[in-house]
Image (tube, rainbow, N blue to C red; front, side):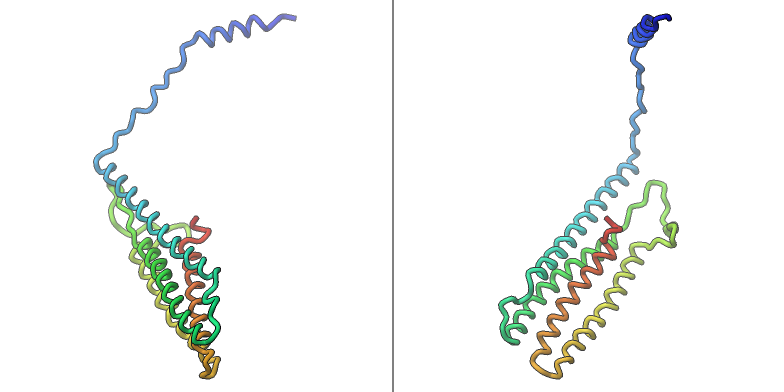
Length: 197
C-alpha cells in the first residue's frame, strides 16, 4: 500500500506557497447629497420616535406604579376619600395626558421620502391598506372621542348605585381612577403591545 503522506505534504506546501487571495472588496459607495439628507432625516425621525415612546413609557410606568401602591391608603372617612381621590385624579389625569399625547405625536410622525420617491398613497400591505399619519391621527382621535363618554356614563352609573348617599362620590372617583388606568393599558396594547416590540 502506498503512503499518501508525501502527496498530502506536497499539496499542503503548494497551498501555503500560493499567495493569499486578494479581496479587492467592493468600492466604497459614496452617497449623493440627497441620500445623505434622507439618512439624516430618517435618523432624526427614529430619534424623535424613541423619545416619544420613552415619554409614553415613563408616564405609563409611573401610573401603573401608583396604582400598585394604592390610592388613599390613609383615608378613613368619605370626606377623606373625596379629597384624596380628587388629588390622585389630578396626577392620574396628568400621566394619562402625557401618555396619550406621546402616542398621538408618534402616530403623526411622517417618514421622509427616499430620493426619487414620489408622494402618493401608501401601497397596501398583505392584509389591506396602510394608513397615512393623518389617517392614524384621525383614528386615534375617534377612539379617544368614543372612550370619554363611556368613562362618564360608567362612573355616573357607579355614583347612582348609592342612591344619593355619601358613598356615591368616592365610588365614582374610584371608578374614574380604575377606568383611566385601564384605558391606558388598552392604548398601550393597541399601539405599543407585544406585537409592536
